[in-house]
Image (tube, rainbow, N blue to C red; front, side, top):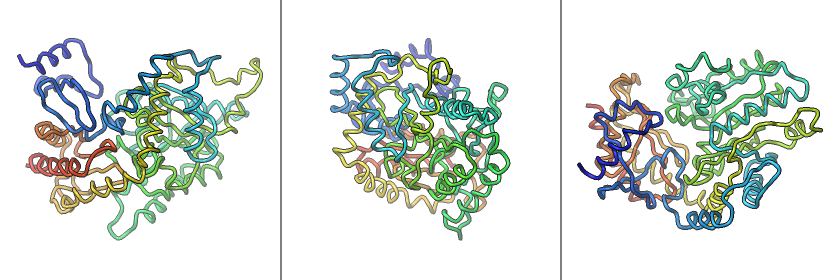
Length: 449
């Protein structure tokens, strides 16, 4: 038995892995990782893999980053955790100050949570509670987009629309309202994305006209529906949505958990539409893949609706044991410092151009329907027929073939169905990007046979 097999066997005895049919591992070996270094993950037998998906979109400055390591170590030697109810600490304060400074203007209060789904739950509850506090208990529903994904806790799952995750739990979920997404995969060849998204907004306008009186908030993933096969849309939709939410008296929740912190080419995706949502949820890249931490930012106006004497029972009584954990906050502060030191947003422009150039040849491939890209997110969609865009049968699991091929060529890719995507760490080199493009190209040839 090899060292990898030893750890795999021990794993299967005790672990139930996320988002996994465990029976797959009768044929598909689990890869035990011994260490990470930069963009590389190393197993116990000397094999290595470029982490092309940033370990579920979180690791933005590489594994075992020396600067973040030091911040974590220094904080652990000082204060590992303290209750955030009635107490506070320096990292939580400084991180909140910096987030208020770098997020869109008007987001002036930070509420800490543990993970992305929890941040969404906070925003949903806070919006509902706001309307209740100002005497509008009739507002108790939410509007989301088709093909959206916001997490897997009950509230977050309720406002999602990916059947694979949601369908089983439907009886448990909130009854939400769904509007057609402005997915530009369906944009006609002779129409620009901004024009198409403007036309598509009529679906949301009609939905708001019908349901605004009972709606707390509209929730969207700005620019990219990540778990929804990395489908993308134009910022003009966000401009129209902000105006419509104001006009109809409905909150706007921006789920920037996956698209924030430089992923779309700006620090936050909402910047590309120059809008401020009523709530912004951030996580993932916030701690560069080190520790679970999330933040829901909101406005002073919403905060004020909860600010009253204790006897009014208007307080937002939501908590997590590790709220505002000092270790997580210190790591997040180190992450934000790296953005400044490395001029990351500008340097990513060169990397995103390299990603575009390295895969451009696949646009002519007979089984590639589209290559789409927003900043440091690129998706390549495999189809059975390029002309009609007829998809492969999902049961054939062709994306899995690309994943298996990549593992044999020093790359961790984790396709979404038949969509291969790149969301690499920001420290990746152009040579490593080219390697990934070569692996994807050869992987597609194997997958479509």
